[in-house]
Picture (tube, rainbow, N blue to C red):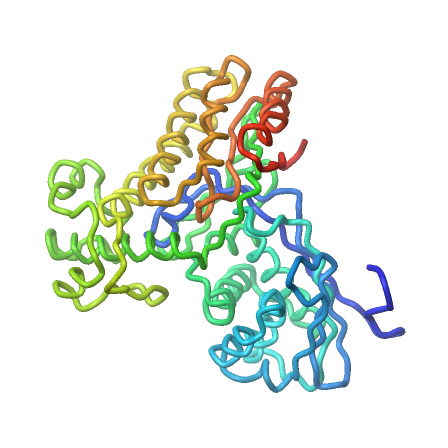
Amino acid sequence: MTGMPFFERGLPVVVGEAPGRLDVMGGIADYSGSLVLEMAIREEARVHVQRIQERVVVLRTTTPQAGMQAEVSIPLHVLLTAPERVRSHFSSLPGARWAAYAAGAVTLLADLIPFTGGARILVDSAVPTGAGMASSAALEVAALRAVAGAHGQALEPLDLALRARDLEHRIVGAPCGVMDQITAVFGKPGHLLPILCQPHEVRDPIPLPPGTTVSGVNSGVSHSVAGEAYGRARCAAFMGLEMLAALAGDRFGGFLANAQLETFENEWVSRLPGTLSGRDFLEMHEDTRDPMTTVDPDAIYPVRAATRHPIAEHDRAKTFAALLPHAGTDSRHNDFLGRLMYASHESYTACGLGSPETDWIVNRIREIGSGRGLFGARITGGGSGGTVAVLHADTPPAHEALHELVDRYPAETGNRCILVQDNP
């Protein structure tokens, strides 16, 4: 904290914390009901909250970026209106949009807390933004914890995660699933957290086997779940769900991941179009059942790939979770887990969510291979850049190989990448 003091002297300050995450398997299949495997990382978001009598909420970030206002003031009454009106308010303030992730906690807690005064809120996050490591979910959870704590409230863990997801949906306006927020609440470093996203069944964490770890390679290419490619892939998956329901009957419980992969490949895949315009889809179907996306008549959607992805990813994630306890000591299991990750990465690319930079990282890891302890890699989260998750041995040769890759990356791609590890 630099410059003039931010907090008023003599008044208590409450701190809320939450970690970022590495998406090891599952990713965008969360909104289709897949099993996902997530790992909390060391980097955290911290939100400091001090209650004040003045009916205003003042927010400051310790890490302002280009085009951002470092400090934002919002009248309390604005935040105590409907979430959609709060979202509209922040949409009209481009330099202040970052503040919605923290200030929105006031709106989402108004049913529990009778806000009689405002607050000073300091945001201090070490989770890289735009890197596919759930920086927004970490900030949302930390903000909700801090605002609730400053008012003498403690939220139940699942309620906390769901409120954070609702904050991102209703105030930020990003069509995310719930895996990031659940991981920010329940995740443990050194463990994979299985979440069956139907809609949010949290299972017991799976410890990484001794001698095995997961690291992230941040490509330096910013991604956003509010981006066009993510929204198009998500919408295409829900278009596929409607088309499969018309072909096979609505027997999936609303989740594409419940379709059997073998049946899909043998009976249905050939009956789905590779691509389809929104206009052609709307001539056959009234709409999709996804409230977070809208079919654009003029857009072209990758229906077949986006439909196949969550069905196959659910199968891959289940297999990965079953085999993980045997990794580390059995090279066959290590290689098979790696193949699952590479297949997931290729499936992302087929949905239009790859990038040349993340492809370069994954291809180099595949070339280096298990001989030096690098077992597998895949793009994470919403794709289109961001971070690559790497499953590897926790040995000097493996760590050296990753550092060599990071050193080569700028000359090969023109960008700079950063190695992120949960417990280096």
